[in-house]
Amino acid sequence: MLTVEKWQVFEFQVTTDKVFYDNPYYDVDITAIFTGPNRETIMRPAFWIGKNSWGIRFAPISVGEWTYSLSCSDMNNTAFNNIRGAFTCTEYTGDMEIYKKGFIKTIKGKHFLYYNDGTPFFWLGDTHWNLFCLERLNESNKEGFDSQFRGMVDKRVKQKFTVYQTNLLGDIDLTDDGSGFFIAGSDYSEINLDFFANDVDPKAAYLAEKGLVNAMGFMWQDKINILKEKVLRFAYYIVARYGAYPVIWTLGGEVPGYDGKKENVAAWGNVGLSIQQWDGYHHLITNHNSNNRPLATHYIDESWHSFSMGQLGHGDNDMNVQYYRDFFSEYPEVPYVESEAMYTGLQTLEYNGRRIIDAQMTLNAACRAIQSGCCGYGLGVQGVWNAAWSSKGLSFDRYIFWGMQDWKTGIDLPIGDYMTNLRNFYEKLPWIELEPKKNIITTAYTFNTATYTAISNAFMATATALTDLSLIVIYIADNVPPWIGYLLIGLAPSDSYSIQKYSLIDDKYIDLEPITISNDGTAELPAVVEAANSQGWLVVLKKVF
Image 1 (cartoon, helix red, strand yellow):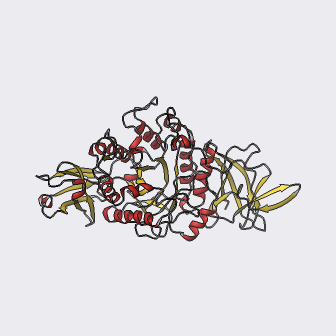
Image 2 (cartoon, one colour):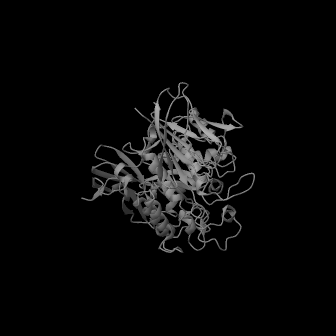
Image 3 (cartoon, helix red, strand yellow):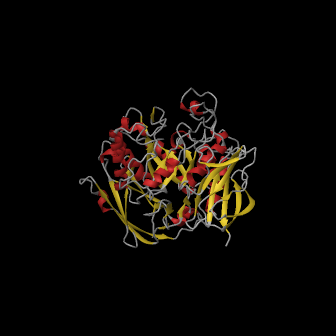
């Protein structure tokens, strides 16, 4: 009997004796029901692979004997109704976390993400919106990389990233040269099987092979106005073809758009509801939001919505952490991932002029998000997110508008290593037990011998702590003036804390002078930043017992 390891995909094909359908992509649904050793059942749609053949992909979720049977929506096509099979699932023997612990889920009452076995999952994402339509699979213009796509995957895996943030329909939906998702002239009604088999499949399989979760969107928000109801068939096909891999469905980019038109909100909501019905694994479903203020909450009360995937933006709006606080105040049990904020190398859209986002600006966004209660962060790098092959010969489109940096420059920027340090820092701590603490630190600065306390958006540190305040983590951003000091408030008198500051850039801890809390519950935080401050600091305070 066939044996398959737990959480690993196996694939088989089924074929009918005759070609019954004018457009098999649209005209028929073939479904497999898998039954496991604990009587669990998982439904998997089949996907058309050409002529009169369909493929089925399945990953068993428990050890033991599994059986399966097929059915067909066309009552006149009985060939598939007689197909049955069995196989045995054994324990996974590899070293990938996603397969040792299982697909990602949420837990009711907790605002974090978890592996299937209940282990916390740290969303460290890298953004590749154009991975499927532009990244080159068997070609590279970077020394040492034989593939633009695989080279970047391998590097991010080595840097301990856990998620690839991707989109499908983008710049080449349908083209005459056969390089798009649909056949040219078909009005999005005929799927391009060669493109899926030769380009999309190898990429999706490689991400899974390397243990990355594919946070996959179907298209950008405005394309639903072009595809209309056809988006549902496309989503069905994608769920069938890739739903047995470690995936999270993100619907699309910036759903449901910046204006939130009722018809768009409803249309995308139907996509989410449909995926919920088609996906037998019940993978997490969300939508990649636009940069609304306050933070977008479309679909948050829908049964299919698993967590929020936000976009704080690139400096074009107020980026105050108060927006996170307001969100968690209203939705304390909803996990939130900051998936698009201050992409490194991008040109900002600030009102007082554009500038290039550097690594420290990205770190500020990432740390403030996690310190505010977010369960992960999605890095973006100019040239990488948009798969810019070269900085030469670009027309003045949205890529040159955002910056001229190409992928081979972007992938080598040190921000990737800094993100590794970020994940390592938090996972060495009981990070899912840390709670944002708004009223535990304030700025105290001296000017002309007068000392006073003030809340300052520009220099306010973000703090998080265990409930008993035995562990406190503070993030202080860069460019703090030398005359700014920080005052801890609301702590227990006479408690003592050891203090370390940590540099994400240098991956280095530095011991600071311990403190003892005064009778009024306050203490001055020892000097953390230098006069020529060029980086932010994570500060760790541990109560001395």
